[in-house]
Image 1 (cartoon, rainbow, N blue to C red):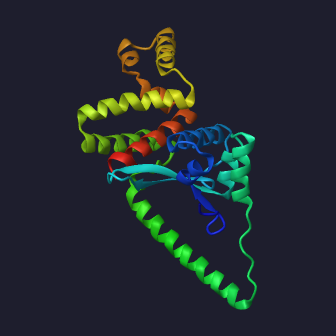
Image 2 (cartoon, rainbow, N blue to C red; image 1 turned 45 degrees about the vertical axis):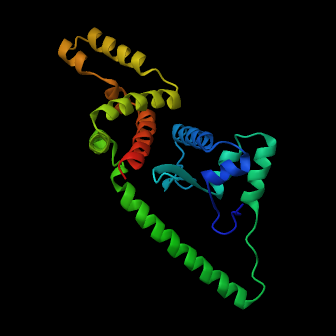
Image 3 (cartoon, rainbow, N blue to C red; image 1 turned 60 degrees about the horizontal axis):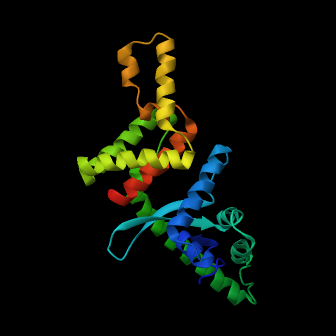
Length: 231
């Protein structure tokens, strides 16, 4: 098991190994932590980073990289035994240099590690550059752009399945009922005297777009799909 001391980072797969949990469950737990941070107006990018790897079949799968702060954030949700294991790893100190030569070697290794991270970041950026969501007023355009890429990659039939699945995932992660919200919105529009044609045009994407929390969560879902099926 690799320690955190080298880069002060850990992957979600390593977390699964330490905790004895299945990797999909760790991914779910991390997403839940991110959603809670987003709901509280707290940034999460310095704690969790979504990237990808190729499995044994050569298919691309998402996983998370966690900083020391991210590991501690995740550890807080687990029981005492699991939490202790993660905290122990997160709190281990880097080895202290015993001489000037050791210090130079450690600095050189740090530079090497930094260059490696930069190279990895450049590759990852190229892969996921089209998954970046810009300003809220362009959110719909960015989402549609990614969805169109997914359509081209998987075909219309598979895309329809993924679209249905994406809304189901959104409801599970955000703990909302989109159909209920959609019906409520249409009812309010009717009461306010909106034209029937306008009422009929309202859809689930409109509901998502109107709620900052839902936008954030749905964006993450579409990013995951884009990395998995397009990149």
